[in-house]
Length: 165
Length: 183
Image 1: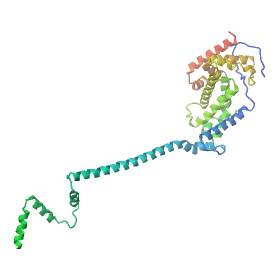
Image 2 (image 1 turned 120 degrees about the vertical axis):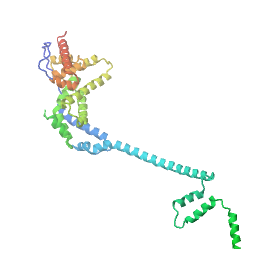
Image 3 (image 1 turned 180 degrees about the horizontal axis):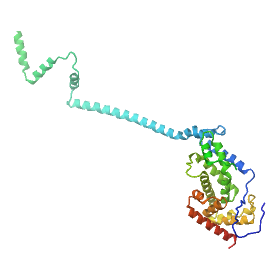
Image 4 (image 1 turned 60 degrees about the vertical axis):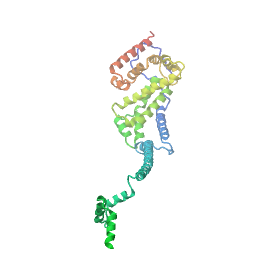
């Protein structure tokens, strides 16, 4: 095994020699072992992949499907966040919307109770906005005249009755 | 050893469906040089085999993103060097005596009975001398003496200036000669 020479000059040999050896066929087996490890690691990375790896199969996975698989967690995470955000938005809209409606009704009731506004006011404003075909401008003018000029309505009625008699 | 150009290997590796073929080309081209680099650092065949396999797995995982800012072989040697140093650290952690010099000296203790060591007395003594050196000096000496690597290339592998590497090699050679003469 070792052919020991007895000459030691104390100098570093000018020509380097490799004193190590490797088991026979080592470098050929090495490639097989490395490729096996790579396939095993890829199977571990992509759980559920039970198919027998074929030469070049992992190449395609790294260039196409593999990238999608590696991105899958991020896509799932993004979808989950979007879903949660949508649910929260709908809940907020429902709760806040109903509370606003309740508040509006309550405010309206309070205004009515305190006499600040009346039902007629709401109806009247509707008339003003949309008078319609049957609305008579003359009637409105007459009412305004009667209320603003403090006309004695009883006198008017009495005098009207006397005339009839 | 089959020789393929680095460009050929890298372009093939980036071609869909050609990765395994390209990786086998890479291994054909570089596996022996990388193995001997690891082996000279680690002495034991088993440790060198572990370091080389880990190196190649890392290369497989990262070759697609290799930016070619450096030569492929300097990148490979850098990974192999780091793996070898990591392997040494792992071994040291398992030793009761954590003294570096003690461990490095022990590496060559079994060389005489190692079935995978084929050197003569001078080679045996040279290996013992090399393993008295600090790790960095040992790396520089091995890369220069055995690999005949240029300092410029070594500078990329070890990320050290050329001047520092020359000084390191000079110190290493002096220490080895001193060891060989028995001073």
